[in-house]
Length: 457
Image 1 (cartoon, rainbow, N blue to C red):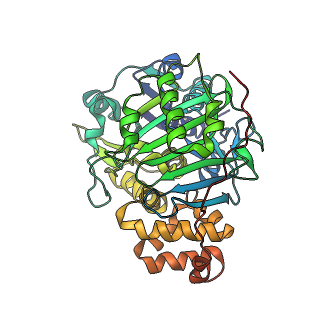
Image 2 (image 1 turned 90 degrees about the vertical axis):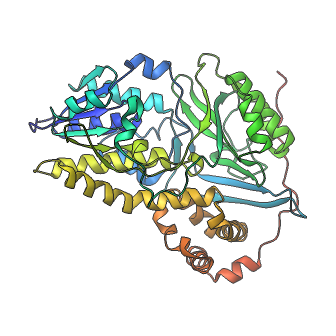
Image 3 (image 1 turned 180 degrees about the vertical axis):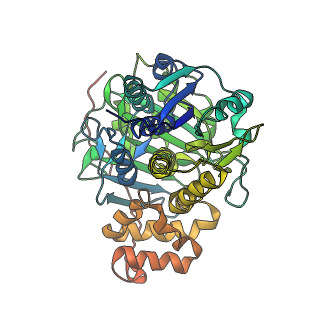
């Protein structure tokens, strides 16, 4: 049984990150109230999941440090990433092919609606208070004045305006990709699925880059209702044919049509697997399209009466989901705040909240922003990307460490400085001189096509 500390906290927002922080604080003896503009059933069944929420080692350890379920025992896990790069401008368009095995962790993508619902149920069972009401800045002012610690895990209701964008830490003023995601069923898991990409089959996520169009991802996913499923996530470059196609999706069925057409026309080597996928009939919210501007906001705001409040998760730092940093960063930040708050015996004033955010930014978010820009093929890192993908094709050790950056992005910070620093990282990760690794790169020439036999519908 949790012993009360006599301290109080309010969490605004009942998504995965907010509920994780709330449950963690409750278990540390805080009297905690969650505020949401939707009731629990609506949060589970009347909204889409926000991306694939693929979680790696550090974020899993953050959850475990709070005694929370990581779902590794029940969901389809991934042990690596299979990569293909199609460059239509190249004399050998099917240019890059490699397979990267994760080292020291397994990835797990869990429906954020399932995770938030499970944690909200535990929170309420353990005595936490859940209040269904919209919170605007005026209401937040009253709430923050009545508790010791206030965390804002949503930008809804105008709350994001309390946390202005930090131009020193923000690289973009607009989205770099248009996004389309849809969760699907109909395809099994096993070595025969995506066997043409990897001997590990479905255990390795299928990631494809079409240099003038965008990127596509297919991987295992734990859906809130049907259990093991598949998630597609696509990123379309501005002005591309993919962007035009994504805009036509208006539901899960049309989203799947877009995906099938995309693979038929651009990624035909995986078309057999994709043709087996089917929509999840009982979940009309199993899809989502939109765009995200990657920004860093002020980690601390003040309400009208001067009460300090902290931004949590996407409210503080938003990421393009191409490198899977959003959900991971939110979970790590939530766990960090819970542990710091439990150990702190003074007021949660602006100085304390700012120090906590600055430490999180330096430890995680700064590197995660840079790694996301790398995978977005940001012009500043275009040479890095070319070197890294060529090195990954020539060195399985480097490939494994490259995708380890998704788990620990801090290792990219020094390498981001220059092409020479990038080569130093190749040498470190590959265990041999970068020039020797890069000299072995040979264009793929032609990707192996799927041999999967798909039963007739």
